[in-house]
Length: 129
Image 1 (cartoon, rainbow, N blue to C red):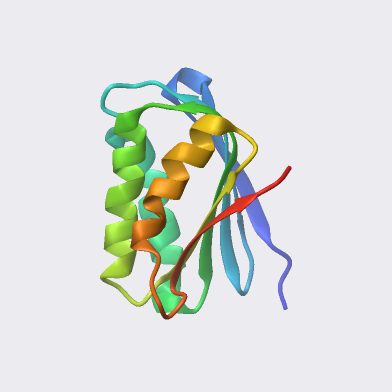
Image 2 (cartoon, rainbow, N blue to C red):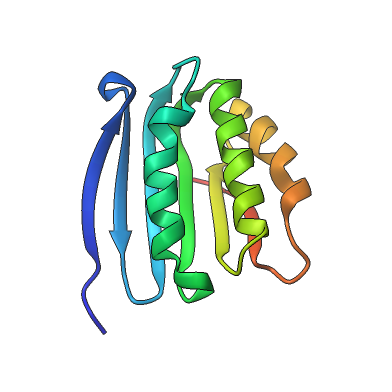
């Protein structure tokens, strides 16, 4: 088993940081900060597409940890929705975690539970930090 490789990417003028780690079993992306850009797809899609490719048709779980986000506007949530739909139409597996103790995260990510699949390939999970 190889050691996870990791790197950090900054988005939205440095307001958002993504720390990505890749292991034999998981592509983990921890998002921190805020996204306020009115068209965040151009910022968010490249790292999401990279994670999708690294997911290797389901051989690695794609884990997106949003629990450290301070704010995401509705346009950023829409980018996440489109990514979930892309994963749903593939063989990849996805887990999105959020901090259920933060009200805006609880409201926003609980609404995304409609995308959870019965086979467990797509999961949305609130956690306490």
